[in-house]
Length: 535
Image 1 (cartoon, rainbow, N blue to C red):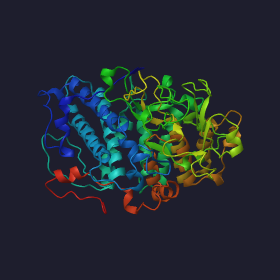
Image 2: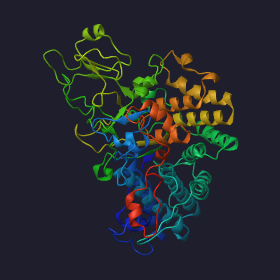
Image 3: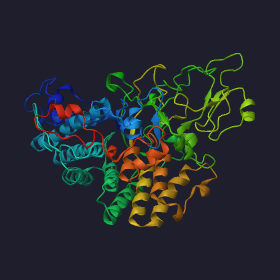
Image 4: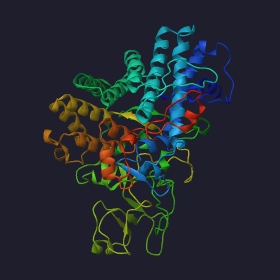
């Protein structure tokens, strides 16, 4: 299967401008009748995909809204602490860009659904396929909007030119009139496998419909059972399967592996890469600053230190039985430049999971950084800080040409089978079917076990709870742009963030379960577009 690098085109921007109320069109309209052709529609659909890259992985925007300010991540030394203390400006670029990019993408999708039936040089089956892709992507972007902002403007028709009025539509209405119909259309019309790698297929649509059902506060036993069936279908009927070991999932040479249901592609061809996947920058500590034997390398990454894991994140793993601690996290760095005491390849510094004593530390010729809130051993001994911390290595990009290159080439994974097991387990649990919940959760946990520790990784019915489900999702999905949504949809955002994020502690209020509407949206409206309460 070939990869397809789906790029946007400049003349689309005026068509997309209305829902972000852009008053100054930057480009020109396509030729008359262009969207009535197969080429025009294919270009539009490709642009729908391309729009996702710009806010998912090319900036910190989505990660700051989904991972930071939770129980798992807080600001590193070069991060923005305002997203931990929930002192978010109404003009913050992160919220503005996610808002704008989603509405630009939504309007591209609206153009597809509007024009596709008038295309004469396209078969009916191809029309249904491309419409299903566009409708899935529209639902995906509306989901981000309602989870972040609550009631937002709903538009299912394309717009042209300057629009200066917008209205807020209730979340339930957006779900019922847009997200659910679009996802069900996608499930009915997408193929089991696409020709081009990177396009959504029926199992990706089933996966996301399951997730949305588990996010809808109105859902009950019937919806949970449907969510369970959808996730089970992905696991039992698709070509997708768990990788043999966890370290294979994010191996950059294995980025089309069978665990990945849907990902966004970034080309090794610089002319197609745009801003590239930059997530390789954000979780890297300052390993090259004042640590003997350490200089910056491609392997260890460019240390932007935007996101630091909380102590709670580390404590979630039992590293004696769970392979994910070593598969997903770096706790040891090796000398890159020789010193008078250290040779290249020697251990340079180490972050033990449990605090070491003075005697243990003094016996080593490398630096040791004890856990952040461990007992102080004195000024000559170090602990984890916002500069030196565990490195989430899922997104490392060792194919960059230089150590300072920002534009990464690895794909951004949106959906994978491991999460389908977690969705199935959660859905069955919430539907009251403990046996099936345990079946799916334990299958995943056995896969995650250190060899020979499979039995010890299994859980029993007494272990199941909402908190356990969140803990397990954290262990598996940390850093992948899911956490804020998971905490919110399961009613634990404030409780767990306040408890486990030291910067957020004491700062969170109920109104923080919604982000502020970007001030630019409010200013551009000639009618009153209400701000979220208390922002």
